[in-house]
Length: 88
Image (cartoon, rainbow, N blue to C red; front, side):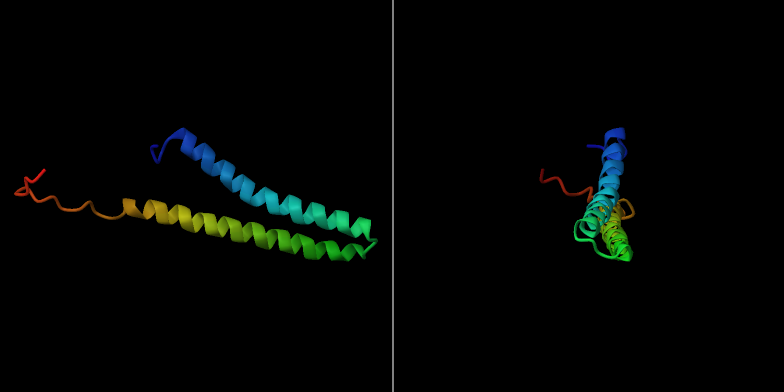
């Protein structure tokens, strides 16, 4: 698949959206449910919000590092081809 195709861009955007939304839904939604279910102090939801942001940030950071490493090969020069080598 081409590195600049529209499908590739769509899949990268979808992956980033999933990396951000899933921790937010899991921690904030689950934390709110736990607070209401066990009648905890409502200020505890702040802990769940911070956890959600931390996990979402870590996921995006990890994805960005892998994404940049994948495109690092574009900066490298292509290997020099020896014109005297005909053993193909």
